[in-house]
Length: 419
Image (cartoon, rainbow, N blue to C red; front, side):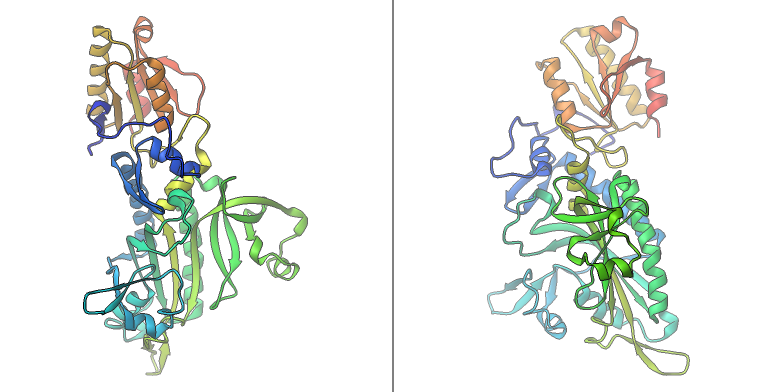
């Protein structure tokens, strides 16, 4: 898809109703808007508008991982059974899809990639001089969610960025981990939800005392968190106790209960995965040590769904400028030849200026239908060319989140929207 598009050429169309089995707001709005298509429970295809959003999120994620020193790779979705047996997760991970061929050979369909990335790095790492390293990928993952009901927030097949860091010492790992906290905060700000996303202490599970989740406040959230609005940090309900509060210097009276969606997490893996594969290095005295690891995950579709859940209103989606499929939705109203001619001129000028524009040039639709579609699709700006706007010698410009528009000239419109 180019930077601009005529809506009459878009193969998808908006729908008045979402499928009756969809209960989540993100799935309802994204399906009605033609961003995604449901294949089965927990599995969706991304259509032109949805793919544009997903790719923009992907580019932001990639830029931030590269800035943090991550090197991008792409690992196989098929994973050897013996690798999973080595870590004890072949029988220990209940979401693992196991696939057999006609010879009865079994492989895992990757839900995560520790079992692949560690053996890869083992080929290239020997000395402490080879550390630290951070490798990441953006790839489809598969998890056996038995009752997926949250649209693209929790799927059986989903696009995920997973990064793995490798260190010679716990101290070096902790320095990088802290850096990643900042990277994630920047990333969530860039996709438009930084103001409602909190670094949240959660249970660290088997290999560390705490892990950190990034939780976005929304009434549709699956998690309950307690937010300290003064410090900007939060604690997950599952780890909430007087002992934990005192360890984290948090005061119960300052905490506000909120519903939230987890949009990312960072873990201290210690040597949980390096040890089974004997991923180690020799120090400057020739002594051997296991490599210390961390991992850093973000579900890209989940992030997209969270933006919809958190920012949509009763009319439809409200995309942040950074990830909207198009910056501007240009509407041509009525069948008047002069209006159509003017709208075409505006469209061509916007295209020439390099502005991402979706042009609603569809014939035979009322103004109400076009306005309703524009609100549902949720581009950050809407520009209207009509007999009324032409009488006032301009174009009516309105932000998606504003109630009233104003008449501007074509020059003013371009100046406002040029990146």
